[in-house]
Length: 352
Image 1 (cartoon, rainbow, N blue to C red):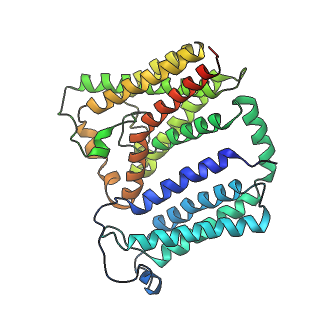
Image 2: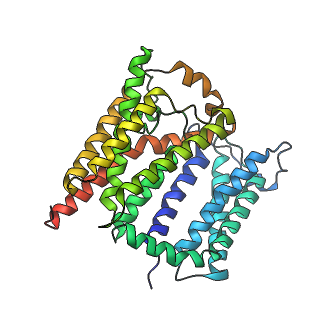
Image 3: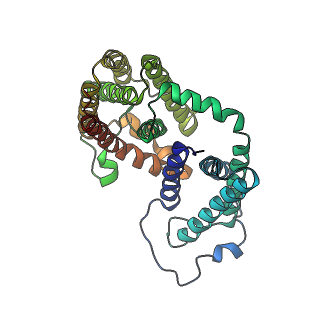
């Protein structure tokens, strides 16, 4: 019996994200002359926020769950819990030790304890996944193509949803290289230009993601319903991010005139374009992603957005901010490479 390639893929991706978030901003490394594990003997911080404890536990709970699922079917029960818990605790120990070389980070035995507890809780939750395993396998077989390529595409869709947790970017506006390269934003422009760029960027990315979904969907799958559901989930994630990271009353601040126009246009294009041939869909999706990436890098500054996001750029969301920015920056380029790979495999198989 084979395990789930998707679970193993998601585990690898999540491990990379945890390492990046733990070591962000990855600058200022210095030798301190002591042991990186000195923090284990230090007292707990005098002031600890509930937010920090919850995020540490939740972040590693997902790691423990993915690890337990990735170990199936070779290891189940108590063995899977022990291995997944050990993985989470060991990774957390290494990350806390590495943080001792970063002036912007403070290693803590309390963080290690919360992370280890979260990994154990997630692994225990994996024991309760048995009733869901077969229905999920049947759902995947019904709506997605077989093979690892569809799993990779599904992982890309999941990462795209993750990018919506960043309120600093335009709606669906992934690919801003200025964040990665520390380049300046464009000068202030007329509001009409900003609205137009936001509308086109939103529409192009929405249509491209819809075409990506159609490329990994099984024959006969309800692609249009899947696209509508995906857009609904993405907007729910965006609303949640604005409400939690900013303020509850700011939940729908992402719904600007440009975003609304882009949503309507992008959804209309997507629902029509999924009827094209597979090669045409792959080509159009790649072109739309490239065009949207160019536009998002040319987008002028939005003074209102800059003022509203002071909370996001500072404080306890700093590490999460860096993680979502990285994923949002790289996502369209990884997706374009994936689309090119799909097109190449299609030609190798002699299919149109």
